[in-house]
Image 1 (cartoon, one colour):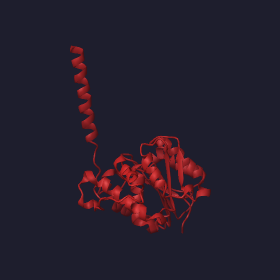
Image 2: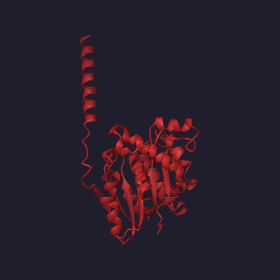
Image 3: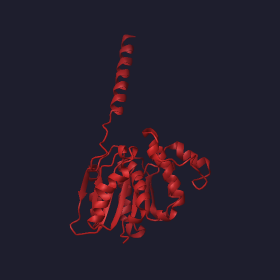
Image 4: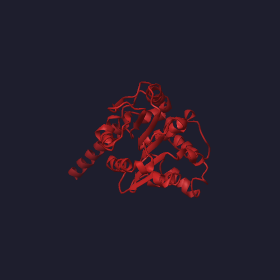
Length: 263
């Protein structure tokens, strides 16, 4: 009995410690410039690929996971830059401004005319939200297992008979919503945009694993994209699957047009 009681106490301590550690993730100062990691081509270029990381990942992750080196091996001549965009930027309505001020506007001023975004998980959502604002100035998107909402939203779309029949209860302004609900509002507004903007999705490329926990949302989104723009492989929601998809996309880009110049 004493040992059992001691075990229960230790388990309780671990659970409490885990709760406090998970709830104390340091916040990012969203008014400070984004941390950037560059990989510049040996040749002068007007092409730029902007990488946005997943939840709580940082720009350096793309270098660590060999996304830059795989692109170089595949013959990509564009300059590449990864930006440490965080969930806080989205929740505090600073996402668009920070990317504009720290990456996009300087890129255009420095002569980049062919700009692509590559987003992983939450970075995929952030890429879509930025593209929604600047579609006319961006060549296209490469989305690797993008976060497009939880099962509540995907089930609502499925229960409506698909995205074309789905109607959000209302379209809210994220600036008027409390932080904890802003993510859902952004996702809901994005789905509403997707169903009406199919022509702007012609240069959007999607890749995901068939065992990904967000696979249902990916399949809904895939139905609005060209067949050649969708890559499905065996895999879960992790960097290993993302690497495999990225490699496959790079090797087939001559056929699909992924990362091609648009100006």
